[in-house]
Image (cartoon, rainbow over all chains, first blue to last red; front, side, top):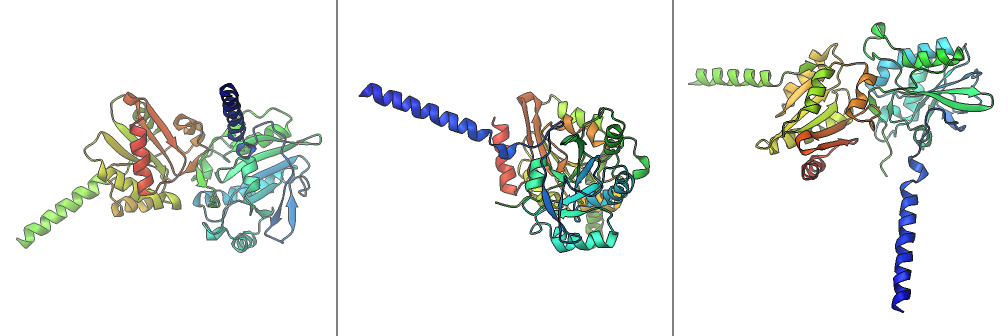
Length: 212
Length: 161
């Protein structure tokens, strides 16, 4: 009897350890790494209320510049014109911008659906501005802040993450940018060359996650 | 009497304004602080006046600095405000919110050159806080914001490691 209890206890301990081990590697924490295949997603475009999806974004013959950004963040504001310029330049080359606001509007009211729509209209964005209401897309990409750029390129029928991070090395003085990290990555992909800097970190506003 | 009081007040406020100047520093200065081997705990908050949650948690650092004046701890507010125009942003902010610590403006806009030197876990979002004491082998990175009690608790827990 004593022996049975002991082995049962041992079994329970092992089983608990396995379950805990599995839980600590729960897939919720896993996000895309460079070279990973990126799954398709659809979000509502605030500009027209229609769904927009990664794989079927108009003009995305080479890939998509996925840009987590928002209205309220001063850092994102600094980059707004540069994001518009990126689309102007690269949409024609097969890499349009897909801007996504992932913020919870109850924390950042400037980032409500209506306010996003108003901003897109006011600035006449040439690209969709989507609202990631569940924050699921931001989590899948491992986005942490705004702005946070992700370059997804088409390789045959696969969509692959080629670059993640900041846009360039000088938020406040666009005229003094020395390292246009994101543009360099796009240029490399367009030239069929490997991306030299696949991750460049930058400061930004923390994504306003829903309080659970 | 009234006149001397006035002069005293003037001198005091001048001294306080002096104490709350923001010093512009570079990466080498930050590295010197992070790597210094004296037995002082540096509580380094990366923030900016344009960052809403940063401004909201600023009083937590004021409270921590005030409470632990007799200990070997230094609260360093590492501002990432833009250098251009900081006289209109950072300077008035710290004049209004004096803190018993140092306020720096880290002038290194190529963030990619140094963010990993603070922590590989850091994607660049702010606020974040680093507590470091090399003599005690403490190096703890907090990717979160703090209420005053949460900061106090985290500080006590970190130095007792």
